[in-house]
Image (cartoon, rainbow, N blue to C red; front, side, top):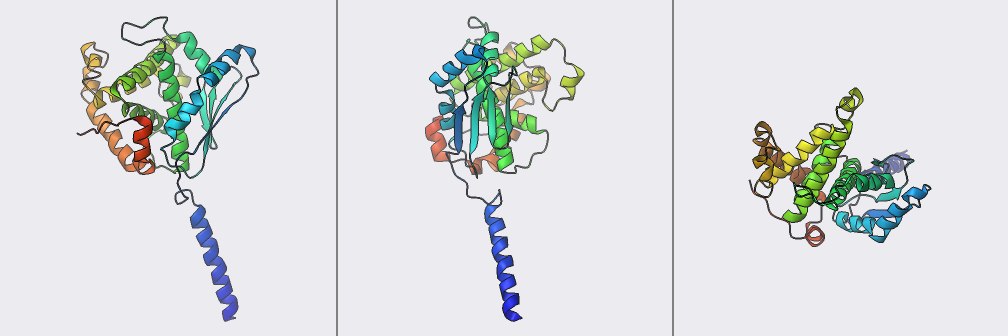
Length: 277
């Protein structure tokens, strides 16, 4: 009887240890966990986009950029055709980026640099990079069981904006302004938000436009001083932007940073500015 009881106890203990070892929160975290794939589009009209992003090694560069993040298992970024949907989305360890998204950004970019300093390239690179980081945020939250206080879509936007604002001032400015241009363009196309858009888990284009500019101004009021001087940010919102940025910075440092290889991040992202309150 004692032998049987000991055997049962051993089996229970072994099973418990196996469960603990494979639990998402305790699994071994590794860097360089991004996989990539380019799927040949069925729509011939998207072949130019396929050839362009592949020639420019867009996913390879994104893979390198995301390499410092420690994940318990790989996340795959796949470029594919989406039957006319200009979108990007995350599902079960796979981030899909639609060729239609890049095609739409190419169509809506300005023909020349705008009066606000948004170059045609920035109007494509900014929103594409923001969308990729946004979807990676969903993957990160999922794989790390990240606790969120608020809507996940807002948290993903904030994650993407914060990472961009860690970069070199000039690069960050171009990416932020390019992203904001895309939101503004989408807002103009919509003219007025519908019930469906108000009820969506995503913020409206107008809200996302002001949100990313507010975080940018809160992070670097000198580099983004024109947002106030040109009255792009209303005074009531602008006064709160530094607090908003610091709140997100505190969350990043507590929740995200422990899962980032900082030495690798410095090599891949460049020398990061140390922000102080």
